[in-house]
Image 1 (cartoon, rainbow, N blue to C red):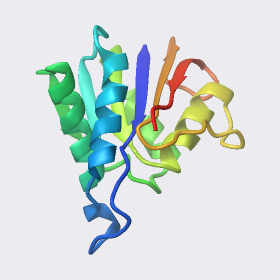
Image 2: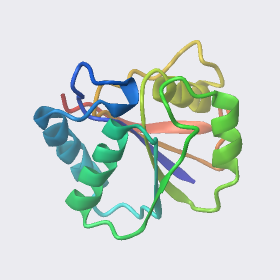
Image 3: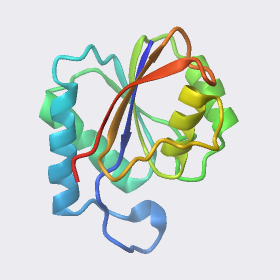
Length: 152
């Protein structure tokens, strides 16, 4: 099982609501640079937060890769989402190669939990950072951090 975690690109500092913040032009550019590390990877599905900046990030990735596979909006991948719920949802997936587009602090905590079995050591994820995790199952402490790329 391979799980790629992508934090959304740089977003405008404010909008009517946090969920409505859009990517900046720099954010779009950084996401396209991160997407280059996904070229040739056997992605089956992109899971994405419903927040605008994450949706725009997923769109940039799909365009950069020419990805025609499934892209699914998931409400359990927002900035303050519950890790236990996210792990339950990920455990239900049958794909072996997933990309999750989401936010801090959730993404750093999720990666830290999967790699270390604890949220005490979150993985540092700047905007447009891409982490690749691999393991037999999506479970606390059972995945290995294969790579972590920062582009900003």
